[in-house]
Every structure is written in structure tokens, then in C-alpha cells.
Image (tube, rainbow, N blue to C red; front, side, top):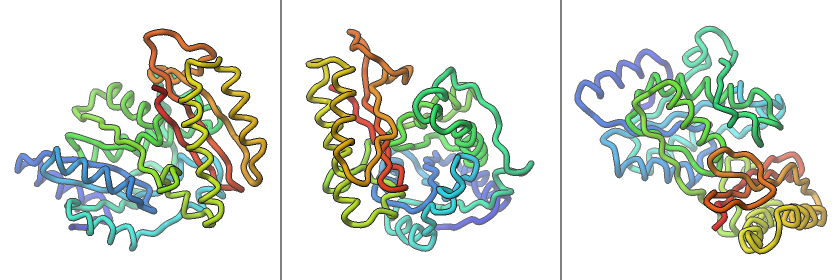
Length: 282
């Protein structure tokens, strides 16, 4: 497994691989890797000749400076985990100037309104930051296939729109959410939870499963009320938002229309740790 810490040696490496006709699979991360991340590389290995990983904590997608400061950075451990997969050929650890040559600022994007829903409402500019760093990484890696987890379902939709708008010859793949034994969605932020908080947080996934049971049996306003009541009773947890949205437009719905696919989205603050999850509603 090769490790690159600057742009020029990395892009020269990619150019050589492309000249040899290698099909490239790529999954970018912000580090603090878990089994969910590693599953992306195993999936990529089934469909590509060369597997590329990247680790970069992207400052422009953080609205809260404290969240950026506290974000776990475990590069040495991450590199060991990537090597242990046996499928990752190269890891890119860019510096800020490698991805932001004109200074640390985001581009502005039009994602057809997807950027204004859910996370876009509570984190203005977040998806401009995501778009800026993902666009630059895709231009440097030049993958045939790129892989992202469905835990960040809105981000996945945004990246699909980005690739479509830029007309990049890249296929974007979504991978299912990996969960801990108690059902909690795996996340780098889980590192900041105590063992008791991690166990208590299983209520998030349990609530989504209840929503799936209630789906099409009771009204959306009643589901919203029940979810709010559940988290009003949880000590040390604050429900930031819960919505049921159309999977294609990501717009919140107050009624289930025939022929549409719906997904439940939830964000919960456990003390100051922000946990997100979602579930396709059957």
C-alpha cells in the first residue's frame, strides 16, 4: 500500500495507472475509520483494478469551529486499518494547499435545491464545502467508480448531482449503513461517546424501526409527534430534527403519495455529539 502526502507525486502515480488501463475505485474519507468505511473499499475491490483511499478533514464543511477542533484524527490507526483490508493500493493524505490552491474557501454550487433541505437548513454553506473538496478530489483521482455511504444520504444525492452537473465520467455508488451491534449507525463521531452514551443512543435506530412500522398506518403528523415524545423522555439527548422526505427530491412530506419512495431522516445531539441516521421506509 503506497502513501502519498502531496499532490504532484500522487497525480503522477494516478496518470501512470491510467496509462496502464487500470480501472480505479475511490472512496474519500475524513479519517477516524470504522467498518462502514472499510466496507466501501471491499465493495470497490469487486468492481475495479486499483483501489484508492483518501483522508482529509475538510474545514469548509464544518459550521461549528468546535466540531472541527474535536473531530477525531487517528491517521496512524487509519493507515493500519486500510492496510489490513488487503485491497487498498494507495492512500492520499493531501495538505490543505493540495485541495485549496487559492486559499481555504468554498465554491458556490447549485444542486437543484437538494442543498436547501435538511442539513442545508441547519448548516448553511455545508454542501458548498462538501462539493468543493469532492470535486477537487475527483479531478485528481480520476476514478471510474466512487463510493459513499448511505448514512449521509443527502450528501450522496448531492455528489450524484455534482457529477451530473460537471459531466464527469464517474459512476457514484451508495453503500448500505453499517451498524454497531446495538443498531447505532457507525460514525467517526461515535468515538466521542462514552460507553453508556453509545448504548443509550441505540434508541435512534429503534425509533426509525418504529417509524417503519407506523408508515402508511398512521399520519405523518402523528408519526412526528410520537418521535418527538420519544426524545423528550431521553435524558442527555436533544432531537435536532426528524423528517420523512421524498427520496428523490429530499423534500419533507406531510402525506404519503402513491408511487413515491420515502425515507425517514433523524439528527440527535447526545450532549454535544451530533448523530445522524436514516432509513428507507418499506
